[in-house]
Amino acid sequence: MPKKIHLGATTTPLIRKQIQESKLSNKKAAKKYRVSVSTIEKWRSRNHTNDLKSGAPPRSKCLNKTEEAAIVAFRIKTRSSLDDCLLYFQECFPDLSRSALHRLFKRHGVSKLPKAKKEEKEKKKFKPYPPGYVHVDITQVYTEEGRLYLFVGIDRTTKFCFVKLYQNQTDATAVAFLNEMYKAFPNRIRIILTDNGKQFTHHAPSKKNHIFKQACSALNIKHRLTKPYHPWTNGQVERMNRTLKEATIKKFYYNTHDNLNKHLQVFVDHYNYATRLKSIGRISPYEKVCLYLHSEEGKTFLNTTFKLPGHYSYPKV
Image 1 (spheres, rainbow, N blue to C red):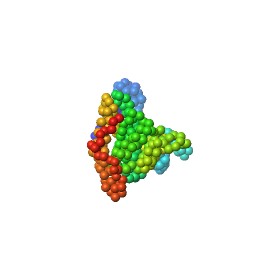
Image 2 (cartoon, rainbow, N blue to C red; image 1 turned 90 degrees about the vertical axis):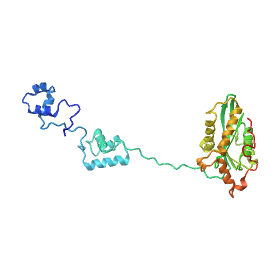
Image 3 (tube, helix red, strand yellow; image 1 turned 180 degrees about the vertical axis):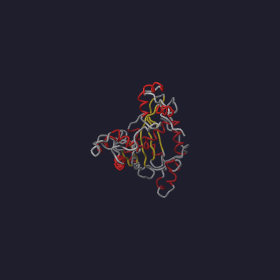
Image 4 (cartoon, rainbow, N blue to C red; image 1 turned 90 degrees about the horizontal axis):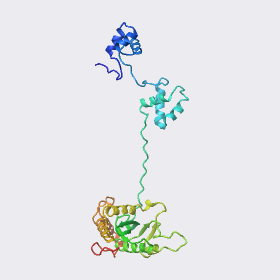
């Protein structure tokens, strides 16, 4: 099988053989074969007509196999850069150049090391709580008539949700939302987690208990606050806010507050009673609540004020 010649070669093996056998002078031979004099001299000095191997030599001239293996092992173990390895090994091998070291790494396949695998941190899960631990938050929504404040409460364990639209976000409104949510939940609420907004707490420690905290105490509910500048602590309700917006104002245009309110309540009813959630075993939030209330532990936590959908009218904004 004929050997491949270099793509940039100006001669073929047949012409090279003719050059070697020709008795013409170098200058006349160069003119005859239309090549340079140096090309004629090169092929007449060789006893073959094949191209020489190109590229880096198979082994470094200043290192033996053992030394090469040691350098490669050092590169893999320490993951040091090319320049750092050169600085370290030039003390032992003064003739080692940067390009020679790079060629060595390339020959052994360590020129580009794979990225080190990061140790995956275990995701911290919420501490398990029985139903009744509710996350509460406020977000803004808009219709053609203007701005509204959407109060959202979602149970950490069952994912049961209650929402209500208000014209403002005062502390009195927060208390009104708490009372309505307490009646709407099928199980009793034990703990409420909110951020440090003025609707839920005083920023000045010298002041008396906030009216929201007082309302929680009246309903035998513990009120907890998230750590300042740690919004992810209340991530459950933050995620629910996004879900509600994606299902309503980000998808539809509303002329009036009433249209938004009706659509919102229909969506929340469907979410609570018909949506099967993967996080709670592919059942609806209401089914999760029922499973708990039928257990021995949950029998005493039934909310007697709760009414099923259809037994009450949609609240007006």
